[in-house]
Structure formats: structure tokens, C-alpha cells
Image 1 (spheres, rainbow, N blue to C red):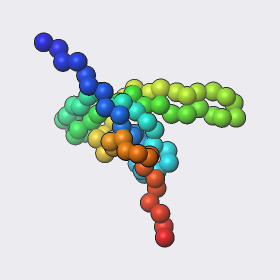
Image 2: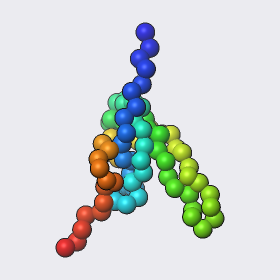
Image 3: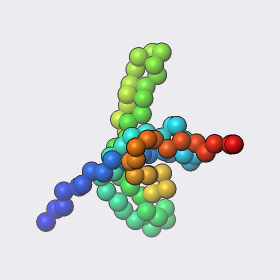
Image 4: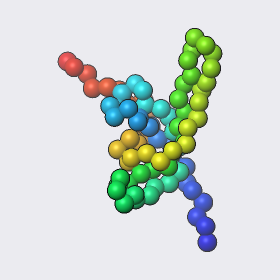
Length: 82
């Protein structure tokens, strides 16, 4: 019996630094990779270039669990340096 994926809204940031470059996405599943640990299969949207009028772009990829966060009321922001 196949299991239908349950899409969960998430923020995705593959830059390694959580901030304003986080993209909205859908988490479709998890896997445990033998060398890379837990990874999520996501579909994420990144904006195009406003000046040239292209995009948005849709990417689907396996990414580390550390690059995925649950959707909240606002996207993650870079830590302030107050």
C-alpha cells in the first residue's frame, strides 16, 4: 500500500544562514541518508529578477533537515546585531 505524501508548509533556506533569503516551500517527505543524516524532500519557490521580469522559479530537492523550518506568521529573519 502506497502512502500519499502530506504536504506541510515550511520555510527553506539553503544559504546556511537563516535570514531574508528563506523561501516558502512544501515539505513532501523525509528520508535518512546514510552519510548526510535526515533530509526533507521539498518544493520551494524562489523569486526571479525584478529588473528582467523573470521568475518565480520552482525547485524540488532533497535538502538537510537543518535547512527546513515550520511555517510561522513571518519568514525567518537574520539575527539582529543590537
